[in-house]
Image (tube, rainbow, N blue to C red; front, top):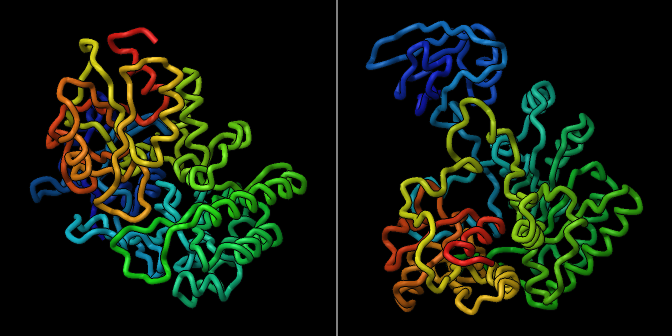
Length: 456
């Protein structure tokens, strides 16, 4: 188990007053060795916090007095101080297996850790879940969690996970729901494998065994050009239409039986099927926005109304927890990024987005009525296949596109494709051949960016 390392101390915080500095290693808190940031939070909530720290090879003990529950003012380097629980499934559709060669090692880590599910909204299959894990989730109220279901039939789930525990691990889902833990489920639909009658069976299985789920997201298989799994292929238009129709039918059934729709299809299905997106009110509080559910309607609402900020509704508790490392949902997306700030001279505007983002942004741009604003679609050749989400745009593809774009225009780049100021291929906006303005990936930010230099 590695000790958490302090990466930042808030000015004038209790920790700052006690002399804690960046680089300190926290060995114990109140004589306990924390195993993750969840336990860390419980320990530092006490009114008296005694830290055993290591600095420059020397041990020091610092005692901090504060109001119970008040932030200590320390940010640490990792959410887990013990070993990340890795995934022992071998799913054909796992996107990690489809990454191009040469990407940084951290992107290849497959986790199946319920703690990261709680903290970041990562999906877990529960195949490595234990009785001790269940006890901790219940006693510490680690809710909500996010569970990959894929199929409720034991044999089909075992086939999909390529793990014999796939047949039995959903018993933990039943146990979580029995103890009132909020759980969001997900089904990744693979054409010819768990779609059609199998998807119908899964939805019926959810209705029968897991009706207490907070939501169930039906998302399409993403296939990069680097997959070596022969059964993996994108949906056809007809297959997408069948999924949309099936989800619509089951929404009505769940609405009648449970009072809410429960199951939702990802926006990508509606785009592929050529169907209009459901009305915004059908998505409730947009709780699964980060999973591609209701993103289009949420973006539209933000563009039209200052009061809607769908993007701020995040999972887990890292948005506020003291000690949360700047990763996942809290990752700084524009740090050290060359962005244009303030009103520039009026110039034509190009909005950079992926193939799945373009049909969402284009109607909004048309409403503005400006002939000098256009949407530039960036095809994803880096991953290839059917990968078209804006969040997976990389520097290599942007360079290819921007090399053919005129100088002197304003290029708006959504920050969702950056983490710590870098694209997934390790390039940065500074590597691009045109200067870009990095803006938050929400409709309100786009509206405000378009106002620079002109009234709309």
